[in-house]
Length: 355
Image 1: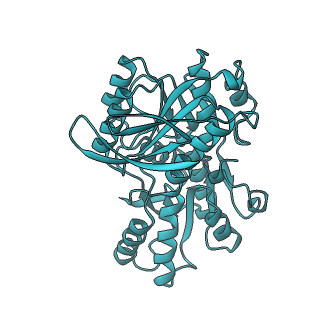
Image 2 (image 1 turned 60 degrees about the vertical axis):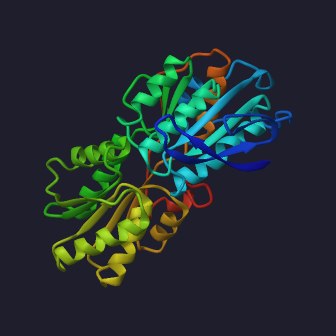
């Protein structure tokens, strides 16, 4: 497999850097390489272990894998964090293994909605048949998705929803993930517990949903959210935001921190250790990265809610759309609380490895 970095210029005139995952170069258009695998399918397409029977039934492919012929564009909000980086790597690899006639182009939105929008427009202009998109902002990317749909492109919203009509959304229920974590927080902290929240990127659907789920679960629990700050799903920002919160709230005024992803939790844990307040502040998170599981085993983190990658499901869904098969409007993967009682079951097969 050859990876070629390509510059894509969106219609808004913004320069964006994307990665085109190439197997055999078939041609070039507008400065972008088109690629197609010349191999034969080597594995049977199967969803992850986090896709239950209902989910798997929704993704059952009727077409023979070798008959799938189409161009797929993948637009990820950013690849600077593990979920985006691993997803952007796995999708073309799975496509090459399962569907030799599927061409895949992957772009990195660099955390900028305008850049990501321009990249989508460029891929549509290059003739993609299916778009898999995880938007930086659910509202800001709606226009680009609408233009794609108007051009005849089938759209899969992966992990993050986009606020317009798409063929399907694939992901865990972010509200449910927030509820699961919130119920655990209520049980651990109890009546009178004081919680701070490190939220994800403003405008991103998981940020809104994970915050809503938390608040739903905490209603009537006696746990109070004393502060909520944005840390953009970023470990370094999680560190600095938590440092500021620890300065603002002295010893005894915070019992727990809820982070919208594990990366921010890692930063928060570092800040808590530096302040020597490990004994008084519990850390609760969402995602299920390998490092988070290690922290839970070591007693440095109370829990995380498994939020699996949707790479396998997205590639199969793209194949179904390419073959003219229908999909449900929403395909949901499991959200599971992982704490000291069951963490050993997930070591080596964490939700963030794709299952």
